[in-house]
Length: 313
Image (cartoon, rainbow, N blue to C red; front, side, top):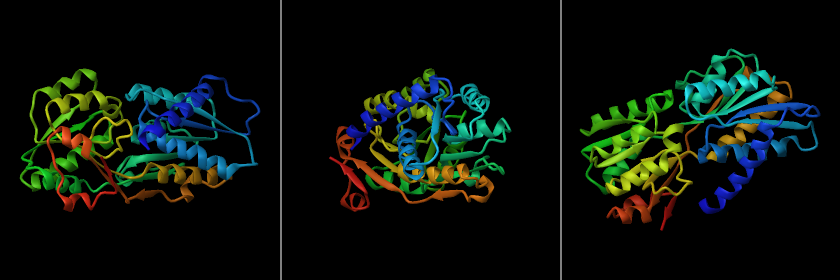
């Protein structure tokens, strides 16, 4: 499945980049601005489903133009992307991930906003009368339980980015949960590629990777370092890039993409965002990568494997 997904996303991105680079279509009756940070496969999968569902819901109706912005994950780029879409005077803005949504809200535009891909959106600063959307919550305590199910864990490294508020919240939550179980948690704050050297200075029993855009832009480099150190990893984004994450616990991307499309359609038809309730998905999929685990000398007990949604062999 992962092998098939990558070329589909590449085709989708290539088509949308053309739209982003071209001037607005004068013949389009509605225009949707989209902020899709970097090449994050999880957000790409959401957007692919958003486009498909939006097309299904608006088939035979008004012509809709998609204006795509793909900023690098930093505050300046997110802000510039938001300002460009506001300058285009789009009818609606769709964002993936908390930082992109917060950048749009910060501009205080009257353009309606639909967000997706937010971790615990009720805890994020994304409220407003012109704002609605969907996000997800993952039981981080389960990740510690799964780690302890196949390895003794006394020290836990947590990879996050302090430039992303939702990533910080995940770090703080996981640190507190670890302390409750007598596990020492240590931060690995990634703000640029230079910070990857921090991964070479410690030997943790396990590492948790937060849902940070910047971290996942550098995921393959991060995993290369951790594999050499024989450190097992867990992530709350699916490992579409096949970087070798041992365990992933995530919310399926297609549900958020479809929900965002439903919300966008209602707004384009005249509904006010404030009248559309936001939604937090709590259903998750658990994937164990036996190939990556074997490389690290890890064997999953049967009682863990039976909990998995998918096992990669």
